[in-house]
Image (cartoon, rainbow, N blue to C red):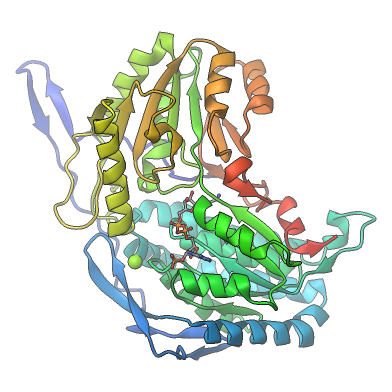
Length: 501
Ligand code: NAP
Ligand code: MG
């Protein structure tokens, strides 16, 4: 299992009270930047259609920037409806003439090859993910890239065993899968989508998010290198309208979307009345629940892990904290201390805990929510760790003693902002935790197994972690309830989304 934010934990002491002289002394860590010398980035990326790099029909490109420095990294092609049509046609031909005719064993070989090539180029992928998306290199290196490779390995293993996955049922591939992914785990989300689709015998047209297209385009290079037949995987870059063109294309058989609930609703409406199969992995507002009998220090680490790493850009982030009254003061004090000692800054530095917010737009959204919190009269605690003056950086923030009805408790912020509520009884916390339109994940911290089992059956969340948070494994399914979407990715369940059974 990968601990998403790899944190058990690198506690770094930046300052400490010298008891004799009663003054604060600070130690700085020396910079430890990962090198960029080993990566190759082209100045301009075209579309990857039918195994070739093709110019966008409209001739338009947009910039991908490094959110930590605001520097331009590369130009990315903007795919029009006509380009999407070309990609879907290529995927259809590849499906009909090649991919659907190959045995599972042969398909598996290609998928294994992709997995191995990701491993071989892991360092390059980690650096590019960090440059393009702003997340700390420790996360891209220890979480995103290894998990992406693992997904390809895992689904490669299923390719020739589909009839064992669903005994006594006939399974068939669907055809062309249109896949749209967000910016928070760009390579990993591409792996979650492409690996099971290929294993089940489908071909793919994938659109990455506009701010983080680079690792999907680097994945296209690996796909080229793997010798995968032309047209089996096509990568089209662009804005929301490029995504909409995929969703609305009449020759797409399956739509897989990960992103916001608002766009998910638009897609569900667009797909209604067609025979396209749909899975939606949407937003979240997940509860992290700390009982009095919990191991408090571990729980504090789990809270930090749950919301502050990857700048809170995690769909299943533990963004609502519920602490039982008896330990509330202790937990909050320890949490504040820990927050003050987090390193926020250069995402390329191996000591950095929290990197840059992915885009100016997201940065403004987070600031807007903190302002709403202030206007609502909530007590707000912003960590006092130093932040760089350039780039989009946001301090970890607590919204304390907040009402269940507050906008900040109800809406997904998608940033390092944690609402804190207290509770007395088990029933009360279950009711509060479930009082949300979302249902993606939850965390429970207690030393009583019976309490854990009670809560896992009553919390309306797709994933419930016990005494840990944000752990992922390709073997276990992930997905939501309610407005967090439907369908599962990962594990055997993840195959169902790409098969007629
Ligand atoms: P988003 O705005 O919904 O965008 C997601 C993807 O959809 C992007 O590639 C986007 O393109 C594209 N898109 C936008 N409008 C579209 C339309 N009308 N039709 C088709 N595609 C369209 O989400 P985001 O801001 O990138 O990502 C953050 C959200 O993703 C959060 O709500 C988070 O909770 C959710 N998320 C969920 C999961 C999960 O597994 N449940 C995992 C990760 C993230 P552009 O980038 O060009 O706008
Ligand atoms: Mg970028």
